[in-house]
Structures are given as structure tokens and as C-alpha cells.
Amino acid sequence: MKTLETQVAIIGGGISGVSCAIELLNNDLKEFLIFEATERIGGRCFTVPYEDGFLEMGAQFIHGQVDNPIFKIAIKNDLIEEIYKNSTAEIDDPSKLIVFNDWNGNQIDEKLLNWAQFCLYESYSLARLQSENEDPNLGEFIYNNYIRLMKEKLEPNFFEKSENLNLINSIYQWNFKWECMYNGCASMFEMSLNNFSKYKKLEGCQIIEFKKGYQSLFETLIEKHKKNFSQRINLNYELKNILICQKLLNFKIDGCRHCEFSHNENKIVLLFSNETVVICDRVVCTMSLGYLKENIDDLIVPNLIICEEKKKSVKRMGFGTVNKIILIYDKPFWDKNLEDIYSIWPTESTEKMFESLKHDNFDLESRWSEDICTICPTLYQKNALIAWIAGNHYHERLTNEQVKVECTKILKKFLGRDDIPQPVDIKRSNWNSNKFFKGSYSYYAYGTSSNDIQRIAEPIKIKNKTLIHFAGEATHESFYSTVHGAYLTGIREANRIISETNKSS
Image (cartoon, rainbow, N blue to C red; front, side, top):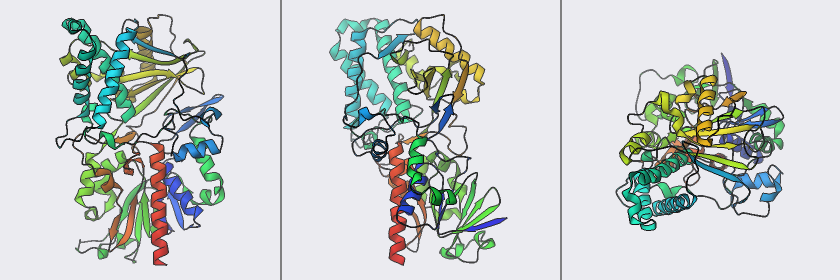
């Protein structure tokens, strides 16, 4: 058994753990160690080298430019294209091809599609203004307003034909799946309407990509303190327990596990699966909300140190899975100007559509691919397409060959082509089945409280002494689900540590 001692232990080497560490080093506080459960840093930012380029298996975009710290770092260090330096507008390239096709490979009527997208946009704008005491789910609110607005725009007799209503429903169904991907949820019926406006969208382009992947951001952040950082990062350290001495508490529990490893009641003991024991003064927990949901009842001992309201907030907040299926070909078979392929799946009736979206009477084994919301080229790997999927993660249990066959079938049907080859290779993310993440990012779920994120972020203190800090995207009230949100929370907790350390010295 190995024992290590430090002042601060940072759990997790994702963007919040790294930003916390760098902020401590910027302020000359070096008494810390980082413990990462996997063999790499990055967390849900996961750049994989591939041939002469790279693939992003996790976070891919910088969302917004104005007041975005990630954008500022990227532009300062030439990590993104120069075009973004002097413009904060969405870059609209009229030469780009966006395909909206039905199951038979036929293009959706452009005028109808434009009206539908306008009405959907208006419906989401109304949702952001919602502040009723009763909290309906987001999915039903959007649908009801979408249909109401479409009836105002179209001729009254349009809805008399069932096939027209089914087409309108099919467009809503596609948008529903796209929003699930954007918000990181399994279903918009699981999202809170009243808390929908809490997310703050930063002004500027929402889909800025790094020229060399998100890994270049980590390399840039670490560069200034490369030696000090490398001396403090510990990979393949899976945390088992955080032990607090029962002497600090106002109640007595038979058998103090903490005292088996330390006789100093003011210290925290960390147990790792590789038989390492770490003795420290405070811990910064940056693990995903998905991990906390599964482990919060057993991770911290004694568990009574966590207030019930914090536990409830962790369990109420939503945490969904968004995956990428990256299809790699010998050469592109698609138009060089292709931007997106949006598949408009057919619907039989409104009732059947809602059943499908709620996965009621829904055979995942045969229908999992219906939750693919878009298939698009990658910017820096010219022979690859990315199929984005949210709503289910059944495909994580399938073989690469099974996924290849299904994705090829979808491309043939929606593009109306029989000459599409199977990919020569495939790369997939599996965020749900990864025990260290259990999903992708957080959202305000139906039934959440408006201050749930604040409760999750609140440190655990005993006798006015902070013992356990919490950081990560799910602890930022306005930028949850984003890399810039996670980055800022790491800095927030580092500054809390610095401030409290200065006060006590």
C-alpha cells in the first residue's frame, strides 16, 4: 500500500480539473495532486489521432465567441481558423448543401419546411419566456405551440388530409431528436420547461472547431506549467472512497474507517482501487454528474455528511447520452459541399409519433437508429461522416459490423441511392457504458428545482471548514453542458481554495 500526502486533491483530469490545477499554479499554490481514473487527461474532450488527421469522440465545438473564455484562449493561440477573429456572426455559406429527405429519398417541400422551422423557432422562443408555477414538460409545450402556429400559417384545409399532418409531425419528430442531441437528454418530455431559459447562449458562432482538436486546448493550458503539471498528474487512479473522520461530526458512528488510515481528524483520506491512500486537507470533485448519480450514496463516508437536499438535486438533474458513430470510407461518396443529412422519418399518426418519441411500444433492437438526428461530414477528416445519436444508447452493445450495416441502410434509404458502400472503418463513442462518465452532459430535467445546480455546486463544510469542493459543467448555473462552463467552475473552485487558504494563513 502506497501513501501520498498533499494539501489539495483534484479528482478528475477533464477540463474543470485541469483549469483548477492551472489556476492554482498561476497563483503559486503547488501543494496539490490530480488523480485521473483513466489513462489520459481530457475527460469528455477526447481527440483521437487518425491517419493524417484526427477524430473528436467527445466535445467538438466552441459554443459562442463573446465572453467565452475557451474562444479567447483559442483565438489568442491560433487554435482555430482566422475567420473567427473579426466576426461574431454565424457564418452562413450559401454553397453548403443541407439535405432534408424522407424515407424514400425524396426532398421535403422547401416552403413547408421553412414554415415549420420558423414555427419551431418561435415555439422555443416562447419556451424561454415561460415562468408558470406549474412546470409542464418541454416536449409537449413545443409541440402544442408548433401545431398552433402552423395552423395560423397554412391553409385551413391543409390539415384535413392525414398525410399532411403526418408530414408536419415528421418534421417535429426530427427537430425533437435534434434538440435531444443539443440538450443532452433522452427525451424532451424529460426536460423542464420552466428551467429551459436558465441556459445562457453566448453570442457568436456555435460550431467553431479546433484545427488540431480539443486536445490542443489542453496542451495550450498546460504549456506554461508543463513541468509542474506533469509532476502532479496521476493517471489510472480510480477513486473508491472519500473518508471523513467521525470525530468532526456531531453524531457517533461505530467504527471510523478514516481512523484506520489517519489519526488526524482534520485530514481527509482518499482510497484508490490501486491500493493507494492519499491524505489531504481538501478534495475537488470534478467527476461527471452521471458518475455522481450512480455513486453519491457510497462515495463519501460517512454518507450522512452529504445533506439530503444535495442528494436530491443530484438525482433530479438530468444527464443524458449523446454519442457519435463515425463512418470512415476510402473516399467520399457525398457532394463536396454537403453540410448535413437530416432524416425525416415517417409517422403514421400523432399518437404513434408520441409513442415513438417516448419509446413506448418501441423495439430498440430493430429501431435504435431512428434516434440518429443528423449525419454530417467532419471538418478535418475528409473521408468520414459522423452520425449523431441521442435518445437511446442501445447501439453501444452492438458490434461494429452491425452498426455499419444499419447506418449504410439509412444512408441508402434517405439519399435514395443504392451505390453507397459500407464504411471501411468505424469509430464510436460509448459514453453511457463508460463507468467513469455514464453519459455526456447535464440538463434541467422535468421536476427539477431552479436551484438544483447551485446545491450540487455547494461545497461540503464542517465547522466552517471546506472539505469537499464540486466542479464540472453540471455545477455552472448558466453554462451547464458546455466546455466553457466546466472550465469556469474549475477556476471558481481554485479561487475559493486560494481565498480560504489566504484567510487561514
